[in-house]
Length: 353
Ligand code: SF4
Image (cartoon, rainbow, N blue to C red; front, side, top):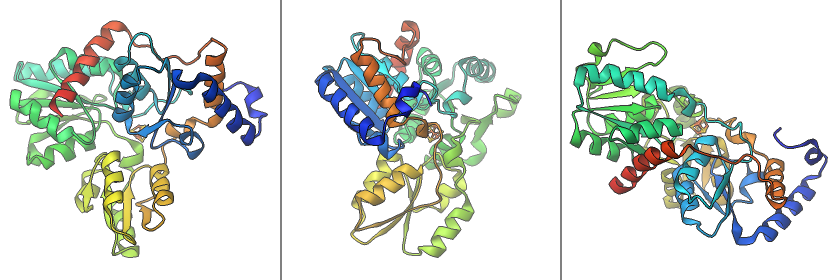
């Protein structure tokens, strides 16, 4: 619980009414952004819903908004702060909502991997980082000629990187990196793993084209081959769509794979009465079923993200009240030098995709 005790004493109805009043008072000076994995009680107040990058871009476009309240996890609000103007203030309702995967790659560890790999390949190496990474890692990548990628454009960014140099280092998700490299036809034996907890001898990776960081999203990594077998048995007619943060074996057994936005498109495109089984965070799967009652949308298994679930509507009301009192809390700030290089890495991605 990140809000003061007085908010716990309010009924749900009072919280809803007070949020509505605060939004009316703040008008166009406020934009609330909500990631697809947020709880229903929070997402109902979002002016825009989306995946992390779409929301960050929306934040940058919402020039009229003096305050951007980002309901998601920290790296998302941080990216919004990097892309926004200095006049805008980005606020995260729960400052402690951190994505565990983004925390798995620290800039110092990335620098160590970089040094080791360049000792083998010289400067024939490009870094690519997933959007789900901390600002310092994005800045490292920007400084070294690389780019950010998302789960929807990772293969495209890999192609871009490998058109320039012979090798690429990808952080922090092993599965997205492996699935993207395999989708480009890169043989398995040319995909190496960098474990920051137990760094390999870089000479052992000399034959690799792609080196992926040993990080993972515990929500998506938890989907298993057994889940696929169970769902296939129960819903033999179902189309199975999974997120590329799932392990390779699960992605290979699925009918298709794609980002959060891609999964939503697959559901939209499915014919009436179709069954779609989805391997991603449960809140999105549940909402897609509510919004598509004429289709059957089932989770591959019911997996939720604790960090995404930390934000409640009381947290949202608290930060709105603080804005109204002229004393915003949980303001997300990024060092200007870090923001400069991270922005460059983000802009390279936007140019490529
Ligand atoms: S779903 Fe996975 S990648 Fe997304 S915030 Fe949660 S832990 Fe991080």
